[in-house]
Image (tube, rainbow, N blue to C red; front, top):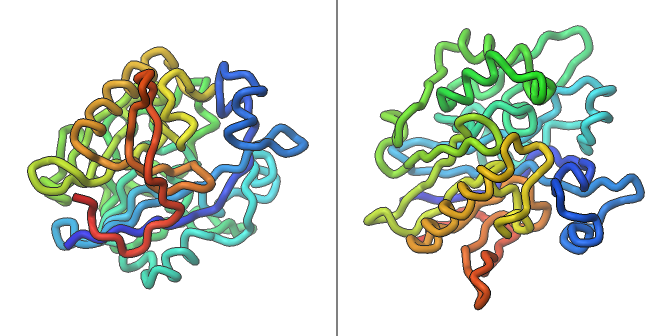
Length: 292
């Protein structure tokens, strides 16, 4: 039986205007209240699933605690300690227990938790010593050769560390032999090339849960026109998001949010005006059987 946990990592505070693209502050401030510096609180939440092809699988690792103090302050990381490790321990797991880490892409707020906490004078070091690291091919290529626009979003040392581990698996199809048929992959290109979106499906390819990553960071972004200033092609992302939500609504797949500060998982709905929204929000997921 597959069971699910929401695992909180280090949280961030980022500029609200950047997080909501061309939406005006008068609108987005009703969704997430900013602080005096115009920053909004953001989670970096991972999804832990046990029982997938006999494995313990962690979908993403959040931002972690790898930044030196100056950069930690610049990027709004709130806590000093590696919160993901504490959250795993609270759920009854250690990072050594994880068999597979699935990374939607390699921006630091999604992959930084792979690294041990920053220590002065020490080089970056990988955690999860017994896990395979699954990364989409286009995301991998982007990390190796970033564009000037998003170069600062990557951890320069990370690709070499992943390669040197001998446990890197590049994904370029709908499934992985490591995870088997219950995890299906699809790809989005509006935020970053080849964003890897993983769905854990129930029987007959219905039900289950999808890790939305930065296609839909949280509930406010379920509304199709809302994008981030960090997205490379906002109009493409809106089209991708609409198709994505139509599919998940038709198949009863729940959405798992990484950056929503108050909601881990919710169902998709459409109102009388055909506008997308969510229903049945869950703040936390603890040993939840995979939704049918």
